[in-house]
Length: 316
Image (cartoon, rainbow, N blue to C red; front, side):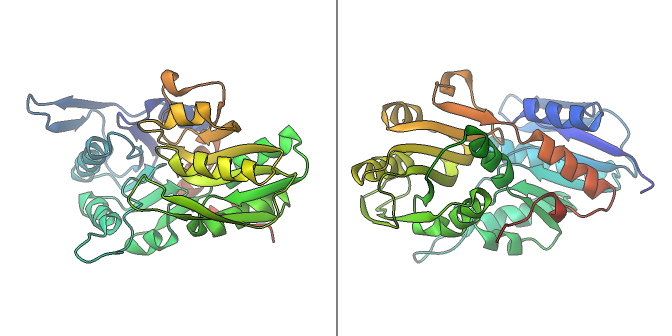
């Protein structure tokens, strides 16, 4: 490829961007970002990007709207600066949970965000563990989707846990749990839950699968308020598991999440750094696995027009 690789980042997760840039042996691109008095975001690209292959690392985690708008403004600035190709690297894709209509007069906000990213100037998307597979189809531009499964699976293999069962905390995560179970060569179980409103679990009704006297690993993509995860852990303990671990790609950890996790029977929750985890949230139970090496290698392969899918595979 004739044009050079450049890495830029917004304010959402500069630590991750620095790790990725270091893994690629590159400095971060020079960019000036400031706010007007009323909060408007303004960006100036402080170096030439004409004809270059540019990657912008910006998860759209909390505060979601702030980081999403900043990403859109950066993309627009790069497009107007005549970048050759612009890839939005969005380790955590905000608004992914609004991916379909479940009741009348609801938006499909993840489709709206896909349209906004394309209109702002993104030529390609690189993301990690989308909440739902159909979001892939919302884009009319190429999208590369990386699973955190190999890195999280390696962590648990290294722990040497015995008699493991991989558990999905809800029916919707069954596919994710099945792939993780294949990674660990373990059986799966599924928890059937009922939810009245977002972030609230009404009750756990069934645990489907054999969990008695096993070590359970709860697998989810997003942990927000941790209500689902902690309720699932309590249900498993009541059904005779010997220990409960948990893992997720995106540790949002909003509101009472840390208090719930601290009080829960979960021994460890293993997360990636797709969104930053503040020091206040890094309790003893929280273990962080960096996603930076995976992102760096994916960026290198995209730049060199090589396969990204060979970085991972689903074991059958």
